[in-house]
Image (cartoon, rainbow, N blue to C red; front, side):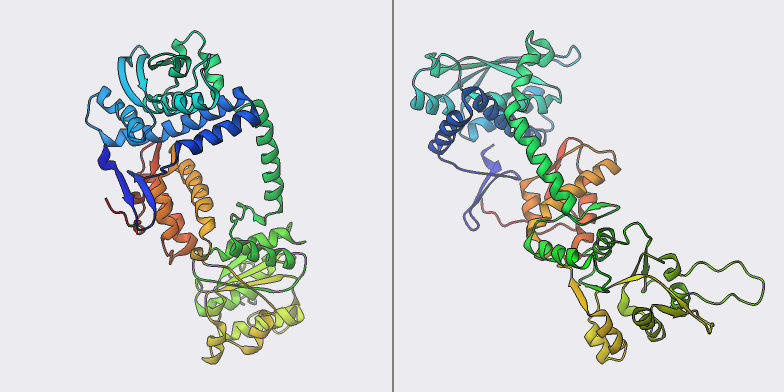
Length: 471
């Protein structure tokens, strides 16, 4: 088990397999425990620490199933107690281990020695009348529940803080305890904490309402680069100014354009996106501005993009690929609000807000004669640069978790999240493909990860660079 621990003095991190760990003074946990008891009271503090331990046990159970896949059930289960010892929490000796999965029966008794919780609690408050190994007890319940994939609960029946020579815990599946429902309530959020959680949820909801959104939901981000971009969107939204969105491929320019449309007065009108690079040069004018009906019998022509977007917003994506003749007509739309159909002679009024998006250096395109300078001046009134994902490191975890939930639902998977190593690797990756690349990697990780497990860095392909570690 010790081989799973890696110390990386180069970057100051400790790894237990793919999970980041901390080497923290027990005295620091004692100070935190004292403050929680003083602030919340012993009962609330007990339940809060039990839930923290429960979460830790769940993480180790995910690791345990990978460490000894071909071992006996007891040897595989023993990974948890051994990890608990390796992490310095307590010395564990199994006394009873009974399991009959067919009968849904589990009974375990374990002896604990040198419990850090009993030591620090007794040091702070003296001898106790009730067991105090709260985090350790939560760990045992969380580990066993996650390992067997069914609720299991432990009781501490002896504690050295109460004068016993050893701490002793006993565990069963929840339905086997006469007071199982009452024991399970220890892991429900406290009423006071529930109220705090409700207030936080309300604050998050209000914050979400202020975030720009489209029909796919709010844009996600909290980095400074993201917030600066959103602020520019907010200021432009209530106006009719033509907006030029620039940025690398895959940064999500269309998402930002849709959010801008949704925030403005045209939100209830159509949003039409045209990819100028996806249409042949001889068809793009008719697609954008229409063409007169052919004289010979023919099916009715498809409505042109500016007509479909009437009253709403027209997004011209990959604008740098627009042919020069179409650029001239676009300039007329922007300046006079009218356009002439291909092959026609009468101008038609159009009421559209134009948003242009490109990853092309338009100044360079002007110098090379591929783009009209007067159109660039007209478009460049309100430019907004969408930052690359590598400039939004603080957004990566938020985006990755959102994508994990989306693709898990799409592919019918149940996943617990990402390993710490996977998340660290994603933060360190350069993301040349930006958010589109992140989407692809997360979807692949969702497909490869087993149900009820974590997505590891190795499941992301092409794999992001793994952080350097030294044994």
